[in-house]
Amino acid sequence: MKQVSVMESLSSPVTRICCIGAGYVGGPSSAVLALKCPDIMVTVVDSDPAKIDAWLSTTLPVYEPGLDAVVNQVRGRNLVFSQDVAGAIHDSQMIFISVNTPTKEFGLGEGRAADLTNLEIVARLIAKHAFGSKIVVEKSTVPVRSAQSISKILRENSNGFRHQVLSNPEFLSEGNAVRDLTNPDRVLIGGDEDSEEGRLAINALRDVYLRWVSPDKILTMSTWSSELSKLAANAFLAQRISSINAIGCICEETGAEVGQVAKAVGADSRLGPSFLQASLGFGGSCFQKDILSLVYLSESLGLNPIASYFSAILKMNDYTKSRFCQTIIESLFNTVRGKRIAILGFAFKANTGDTRCSPAIHVAKTLLSDGALLRIYDPKVSEAQMRRDLNHPSISQDNILFCDDEYEACRGTHAFVVCTEWPQFRMLDFHRIYRSMDKPAYVFDGRRILDIPSLTSIGFHCEAVGRRTTKIEHIM
Ligand code: UDX
Ligand code: UDX
Image (cartoon, rainbow, N blue to C red):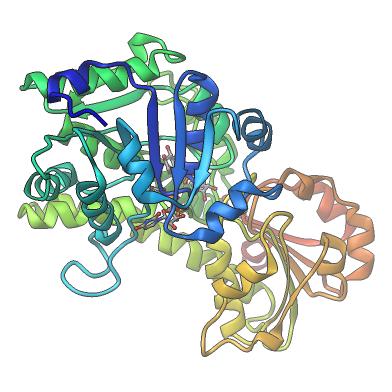
């Protein structure tokens, strides 16, 4: 390959992109990129060969509505899945980094700071295999100033090439990934706005998005603003859920109904109706990790009041999950030892098979540690995944049965608990379920998707988050 100047390579049209990391973010975003840019060859690589094999098979490693159709259209056309990381880096002009950045499990910042090991590995790989100046795009959610670290690694191992690092955080929400990627609310591009090379790199990425995103939705800014915006957006979303869940607790004690309150609050055009759905707590790979990252950042800057402010969102979420479990145990006469309980839904939200930080894991572990016998069903989570999530020395696997449908899960149980808002759970034959259960038969709706008056008329004893519970009615 002929060696070209930095300016020349940054100014030439982008025709070859690679994405490192074929997970929930890297896979779907590369597929949509290939769909919208038929003239760009998109190569997706991953350090895990099994992941690549799965993307090449008929059963994709990620369940997302509409994703199969997109992948089928572009795979083999201009979307390639490959294990050749070095080759993909060498051949691409632009490299997206979509590796996972979990919370650190040990060492400095343990339990709060993001673990950037994967990011660093990838930066070193890019430095090693790049021939020519690359535009490196950080898509993984990272702590503020990560781009600076990547730049430093690249600069000091560059073999004479000058790479540009951009921040382009992904805002897709799982279960809606294809919709969010094809029609994003906004695209953020952060880069070095003060240098000519930085501006050229920003424009190169902007030109890629302009194929399908309107210019007013593409926001360019400094790298740090872009990195912080992603953490801030996730904190604001999570904060709304914690706020409505806090109101839900008051509703449970007073007789107000959280759905009615949410409707009234959300009708204010300054607030809007989204993210006001009270629940047993939020889950997912991002909210907790990103808020912890914000807390760690604030502490590192000596801003302890800011750190406590954001920590409260997570404390509220932990309280919500524990309170829901407490309601279950108290309602079942203060003990679940030896009682059969069905868990309906294990994913952290509907329309995904992802269980990372799922509140269902908290509920299952709490009930198991109190001696319950669980029967679990989720339409999209594999038994192997659930076993991994519940694998703990204190948990006997003999106390868990994984079921093929809701009816099998509920048969012979004392209670069923809705942990994920799968729409199919609304449409069950509840008369049949009631007949098959031990009496008194209890329902615990952690997602507020069930018709409580109709279940009560069948004979169920019902508890749903955010409304006055039968438990309270007994007491009053
Ligand atoms: C993404 C983002 O990148 C993360 O920052 C965000 O906060 C959550 O969403 P996600 O796609 O959900 O991560 O993670 P995951 O599904 O685990 O995919 C990451 C992929 O990167 C995995 O397939 C993993 O094998 C791969 N990887 C990891 C590499 O290819 N190289 C590495 O060095 C490390
Ligand atoms: C989130 C952000 O929405 C997305 O922009 C970012 O890129 C990644 O993190 P995700 O975690 O995939 O996306 O799903 P999201 O729809 O935000 O739900 C997160 C959790 O909050 C789920 O457990 C969901 O059930 C819960 N939730 C959501 C509520 O409990 N109530 C609500 O009103 C909304």
